Image (cartoon, rainbow, N blue to C red; front, side, top):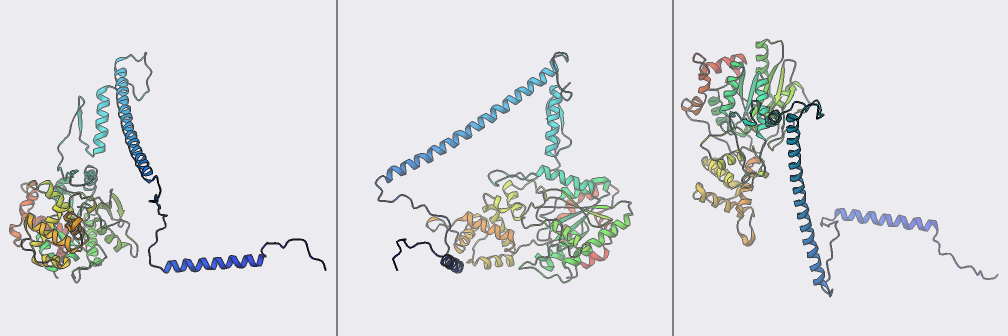
Length: 518
């Protein structure tokens, strides 16, 4: 038999090719599984190896890279300046053309120029008046008047908190929320004023109470709702209830279903029982009014006092096993507009955004900012200088020895000789920075970072705090601050008569007694 002159084919058999493919896939699978079990962190980004040190022209390449970066930065800055100049030129040109159009409409005859129907007969004064009116509507002021091109704004009922650029990163839109608040007060028959049980006086506003009492000739009703009662001990809760009930009907409520790590037990005052009591009082008022329409209940208060949580708690008593329609969160400013919700056929609820109401006139701007930070009305990430807020935290906790000892135990701090004053606050922040590792270069304590840590612990609830109620309610500030109740009319009811009359309308006689059983 002769030899074959044809070369042997190198083509791999199909069976062998499939066998190799399966082995490779199995190997890759095992490798990927082993990588998942490996706890060593590996970056998926390919690292730039850079320029080798042995490269002869390394210095020249580095210099060229720096030059390109500098040129790109200069080009970006010049482009930004050109855009700004173009915007200014466009704005000036639009203003000139608008002025020329207005002058032409007022000076030329109707036969010489053809204008649209909307711009005929428009004068400079009318144009200025329309612009001022549009700005007034945008700012939330309905009473702004314009005379001869000069606007005269009326004084607002309060100026509120003016956030400066040096203290906060951005300013809150108070005028828009003021408009929403006035709308809620005007449309509501009953106002639920939500206050924080840890600091009821700090989350109250006398201007709000005065506005509600004077609205609609005194036909509106105001109820104080003491929320977050699980964060204060029973004696403190009972003291605040007794103090607040001298001014207005007050009901406690635990709106949030989450249980804090340091929550206090109030026996019968649970989320279900307190929400049911509040709902029962609203239904009683609706039945006694005997209106042909449903009553409107507005919920107002400072930011982060739990307004939306109270609404969700009320809705949970009528819509069982359903999630609340109001979005809630631990950070202030979740609710941004007025929201209407139907509780039943007789009651409608109005959820409103939280408004920062004014503090005392003698308080400085820095103290107001620190006060709002501690009320969690301002997100901590918007604070530029947290040291004043941390100083105020130390002052408040040092007034209560029990709370101060819990704070020292939380941070494992040594004994602080003088917690009061600026020197004591600095010593406190230095100790916190050392214990929590907030150190800068050379081991220097970072006071700002330590202060931000303390503020975050305060806002997140890791630091236990609450204010003590007044000892003598007869000489408490509520009698002096609620004189507007008496001043509405010389023959009007007193504070005691007002509370008793309103309590009878809401059937709160038994509920007021039940709130102090703990």
